[in-house]
Each structure stands twice: as structure tokens, then as C-alpha cells.
Image 1 (tube, rainbow, N blue to C red):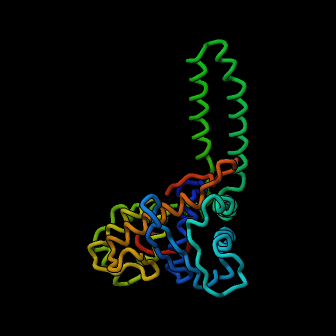
Image 2 (image 1 turned 45 degrees about the vertical axis):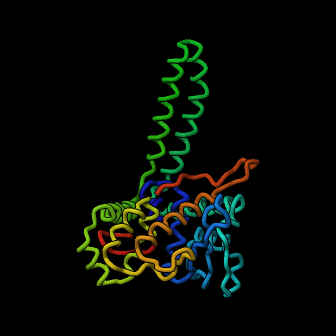
Image 3 (image 1 turned 30 degrees about the vertical axis):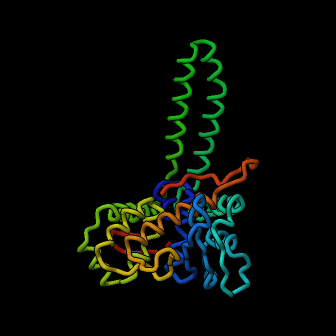
Length: 285
């Protein structure tokens, strides 16, 4: 939900960030496997090690069940990301809807309805004015109307208003996002000495912010071992540098696969692909 509260919209990256979140908590493990031929990309295997806790958010349960099936089984289960192509997009769409609902307590109750009404009025306005202005003033005038509607629509998207709880969490997230960008080696060493799993517990947030590569590079020189829940068949001597490249590529490929839809479908994965708490601490997802 970190990415949602930063940009006020449900991105696919918010859901993909659940993968390392589950890995850091021992719920799954991830393995990159070599491509089958020169024309294909590497694949990724997600292995369920245990079930989600009962109090997990509904959007998280939807994703997890979509990947691994029934909740009444405690046995491990492997899923190849490539097997999700052109099928998992419906789960992604439903999970984004549930994520949106989960985020609503952080916003003013009427802000979403006001935004939807304004957007509807803009659409009607564009439909009515565009042909009228085109007829009277020609293409230049019609283009000006279209451009104005686009600008107003962009402003409208950002009209949602957070409540006091939402503003507090937003300030914490904004602070951590800045920290991801500017953190220095000495500060990270101190944080790792206090919590050796600090990188693992924060990488989901960095991924949701769209800053994973920058965040992971800061740990390259700290001589720390990469997360034990991630492995690659093509790399038997995993260090932070090749872990970062391998994991980043695996998540990028997973996102494009999990939102892919058959060409005949009119409803794709949708959403945009954007994307811890406090200046140096963790926090609940």
C-alpha cells in the first residue's frame, strides 16, 4: 500500500512488491531459472512455504490465492511466473480494486466521489465542446479544448484528499522515500548492525517507490549476503551486486507477465507501473 499512499492510485507495482514482502517473512522463496532458448527470457519460480496469516489484507489474500490456490493446504507449491501469462491479469485487476478499498480509511470520505463526478463532467464537456469548437474555430480551437480537458483531468486525479491519518502515514512514507535516495553508507551500516534484515524488510517499499535499483546499490559495498529466500540457477556465487540485477529483472518480467492479457480481451491488467516507514525504520505493509 506504500506506493498507493504516495501517488494516490493503485499501481501494479504495489502488488508485485508483495513478492519480496512475502519472501522476507519466510512465506515464499523465489528462484530464477535459465531461459529455455535464446529467444526467451529467464523464468522465475515462486514456492509457497507457508500460508498467509489470517489477518492479512484482502488484496493480499486475493493475490496469494490467485498464485497458489486453496488456503486449506499447508504443503509447499511451485508456480512458474511464465504460466501466468494472459491469465493472471484478472486477479491483478481484482486485487487492485481491493487495494483501493483498503486504502480508503486514509482519505476523506467524499473525496473519491467528488473526483468521479468531476471526471464525468469533464468527459461530457469534452464530448459536447470538441465538435462545436471544431466547427466554429477549426482544428486549433478544438485542440485547445482537448488540451484543457486533459490538464483538468490530470488535476482532478490529484484532488483526492487524505485525512489526518493518511497525512501522517504519507509524511512517513515521503520521508523514507527521500531516505532511499540520499542514505549514506555509515547510516546504513548502523541500521544493519541494529537489524541484519533491514535491507530485506525495506526492499518492498523501495520496489513500490520505483527505487529498488538505487536502494540495492547502496548495499553493494557493505559486504552483506543477499536474501536467503532468493536464488538463481545461473549464479552459484550470489552477491549483492548480481542479486540486485537478477532480482530487478525477475520482478520486471513478473510484472509484465502478470498483467498481460490476450489480444481478444477488452479488459487488461490495467493500472500503471510505478513505483519503509520513517527516516530509517521499517513498518507494517
